[in-house]
Amino acid sequence: MENPFYITGIIPEPYFCDREKETAWIVRTLENKAHILLTSPRRMGKTQLIRHVFEQPSIKNRCYTFYTDIYPTTSLHELVLFLSKEIYSVLVPKGKTVLDKFLAGLHSLAGSFGYDPVSNTPTFNIKLGDIHSPELTLEEIFCYLEQADKPCIFAIDEFQQIANYPEKNVEATLRAHIQKMNNCLFIYAGSNRHILENMFNSAAKPFYNSAEQIFLDCISKDIYTAFAEELFAKAGRRITPNTTAYAYDLFEGHTYYVHNVLHNAFAYVDPDKIVEETDIDNTLSDILEEKGRSFASLMNQMNYQHKETLIAIAKEGKASRVTSVNFVKKHSLKSPSSVQYAISALLEKQLLTYQNDGRTKVYSVADRFLEMWICRIY
Ligand SMILES: Nc1ncnc2c1ncn2[C@@H]1O[C@H](COP(=O)(O)OP(=O)(O)OP(=O)(O)O)[C@@H](O)[C@H]1O
Ligand SMILES: [Mg+2]
Image (cartoon, rainbow, N blue to C red; front, side, top):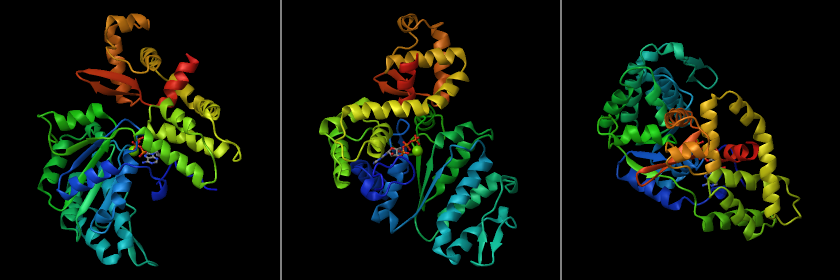
């Protein structure tokens, strides 16, 4: 029996839980021709939500949808490569005429394509070194999107990466192109709120006010637990309602973590046994043990002040007023300023995340398994 709790890859529709309101809002916003900024803490479900939106008939039947995750990129060259590769792979199955239209527009890369004599189509084997003038190629890509024979929606995941590119004015260049487009809408997604909010909410920045914003929170407890119980039931398995609620509460509903624990409970608890709270505890211990090695090496490579700050925040769970004398004293940290530095570095590395509570920032460890592991080890 296939495990219905997907923790990697694309989730087939019957195993995708809820997100009805968010999906409807995004579809409606796109229909109103507005770009979207989608943020959430890490592993809440942004990527899956985007894929789900793209599966909606009103989108799927009418538009070309593109999705690229630019987390690995550190330069405009790579961005250009990722965008063009994605367009290529979406267009290949649409046939030669459609594909040729795209490739013919990429004058700056002409001569860099291979050719597959069997399928009678060009192959995309562009290397970073082939992109000599990324600004020009970028322009050609946008030009294609503008002239495509269907409306386009391009989701760029982990969009905050562009803020780190060494090239000058990348944000301004991108924004200038996008502003002129009528045929392509963008979904900018990412979990680094720190950078994304700065990009979209400061008046001095090129992307200021250029997208409708949606913050993705947990799936509600009633909906998620009913869904999880149904997945067990459909497989002829049993789990008590208290247990699904217990798994949900362990992580305050943080999607990936709850889902991961139930995935493992489904996989490893004897199929004839009713899954109970103790099974969740055991499953969680196994997960933490398995992840322990990589967590240990992460801690091993960390600067001491960053480490003690991370530990303090893990122990606190949700930490506010972190640069106050109280917090520094309580956790025997060096000084408010050292905590301030550590927090910037840890946010940058996405090891910490925060939520706004009025004007105060409430910090927590981004990876809940890491948080639990730290609390057990230190
Ligand atoms: N609607 C959903 N139904 C079922 N499982 C979900 C759903 N949303 C998220 N998940 C679970 O959470 C995992 C993480 O989701 P996803 O990759 O979309 O999160 P993310 O916010 O993009 O994370 P990251 O910040 O790491 O990119 C999925 O692999 C899946 O296990
Ligand atoms: Mg993602």
